Length: 247
Figure (cartoon, rainbow, N blue to C red):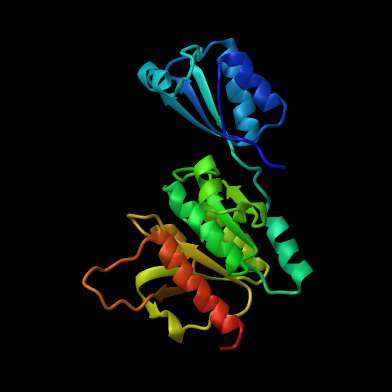
């Protein structure tokens, strides 16, 4: 079921959105506001695992389309999130070893959309993103994915490394993109695998990298030393495809 991207403002509207089961990506609350209605909204946000940010009135005024936000503004996801289990079930239904793409704090919606598009074309069974410090499924992501979001499940998780550990118990190996790693052609990227792509500026975080089994470097011959995150994801995803096809 798809949701339209929507900014919800006003206490009653936000509370009703939570109680009706809508997927709220982010909740912004006026800093210092802790009255009864706001506490109720925060309680609902905690139940859903929504990321909450306390901000100044000027910030809320900028977000508000009506100027009647009453101290709360919420962003609803453009698309419903899947569960990691859905991705494993999809792989099983296809008779294929799981191939997942995990994104460590990707912030640009165009990058996320492009990676989801690549994931679909490369036959990946899903994309996993963290709840914090990362872009969610906005309308821009939906548009940039060129329809791939209709077919490729995306899960949003609280703790990326915890999910990696759970998936390791199910037989997955993890490889992350890193300039200091082994050249990708020398690695065995077949079998159940998770490809980890890092933040546009910082790359893969130290903790996430420590949970990876391999680091893969993309050979580069030019004067600059890094690729766009979505391009790097595409290059590595298709090396995985090549190896899976036995080429």
